[in-house]
Image (cartoon, rainbow, N blue to C red; front, side, top):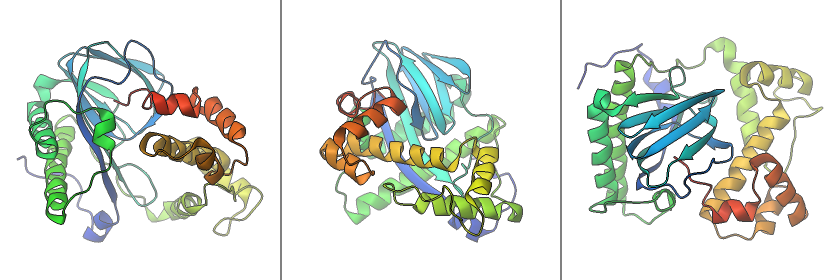
Length: 293
C-alpha cells in the first residue's frame, strides 16, 4: 500500500466524521434504455463490467463505457443504462459534522478500469466478502436490511474499511484529495445545518424565526451562499430523501408515510412527491427508484 499522504488532522476530528456503508452490488440495472428522474445520490464508485452508462450531472454529460469506472460526487444526477449492462457498485456516506463531504473536487468523472486495477480487484473482493459465493446481487437486494451476528457485523465493517483505504489511495493517485474539515470561521454554518437537520420532517421551523441566534433571512442568505438552497428548499430535500428511502425499504402505506412528513391527505403527498421527483410515490416504489447506479 502507498505511504499515507495528506494533511495531519487531530484524531478527535476524524472520530467526529460520519461514515456509513450503503451497498455493494453486482448485476443489471432495474431499468434500462430510459433516463432516470433526477435523483439524489451518495458518493461511491461503479464499474461498467458490461454495457454503457451515461450520466447527466453538474450540467455535463459523462459517458461510461464498458471497461470504465465512474466516481460519483454526492448530489443530484440523472442516468441512462443500456439494456444488458452489468454494474459493480459501492455506495457510502462519508462527511464532516456539518454535512460537507469528505471528497468533492474532481469527482463525477470516468476512469478506465485498467488505470485503477487495485481498486477494481478490491471492489470484487468486497463483493465476495459481503455476498459470499453469489455471482450477482441487485441494488434492491444489496440495500435490504438483514440480521447479522456481532462477529458478522465486525467482519463486514472491517472489509468495508479495508476497501475504503484502497478507494482513498486510488483517489490520491488520480489527484483527488480529501476536503479539509471546516475552519472556526465556518462554525456558524455548521450550527445552522445541525439545527436544520434535527428539525422534525413534518414541520418547517426556519422561516421568520431565529435559528441559533440569527434571523430566518440571514439563515437563507447563509445557505444560498454555501449550498445554493434556501432553508425551506433544504428541508424539502430532506423530506423527499426520507420519503424515497421509506418507499424503497418499507411496505408502509403511502398515506402513513405522507402523514409522517406533514401531509394530512394522501393526495397532497402524491402531488408533492410527483412534482419534485417526476413520478408518483407508487410508481417510484414499483420501479425500485428507477435504478440507482
